[in-house]
Length: 225
Image (tube, rainbow, N blue to C red; front, side, top):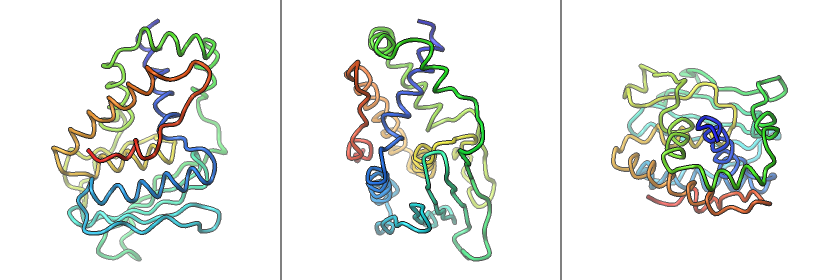
């Protein structure tokens, strides 16, 4: 199988396994564990507030002002219908900066349906287990989370150049997890987290069933490094 096709399928599998929780209950649980994971990963002084339901959306606020002079809030209606607002931490009412917003009602390139038509799922899963290599998963993790090709560097207040805010990420849970990684300024934790994610998804894909695409447990996804 062509290497680009293998990585395209892996891209789809990683997104499904980790960043497409099922139903309202699954999404609430994912966001709750997401918020809780930041205490250790960012070395915060306290847990962020638990996400809540507001106007039909799951909403939450994350304060990254401890070293970035920044906080963000999110409103998730569906995986492909959401908004994440970035604000300066000094004054929430008047220091609004920008919004990353996705409206899934509008057409986008149908990569998932195109990939699904290239081969039967069972044959594709078998091929991935036989032909995919760990460096392919590493390339996908970098492209999705750690070093997205299309990105922005915000000069103020997010001054560290190593922080990449990914552009064009249309999945709410993927975008939030990407921010979790990017806004961690602790080099050792970033390196350890990248390695953990590569191993986690490599094992999940190599061991998954031909017939059933399991989601990763949120407790595995947000396990401490």
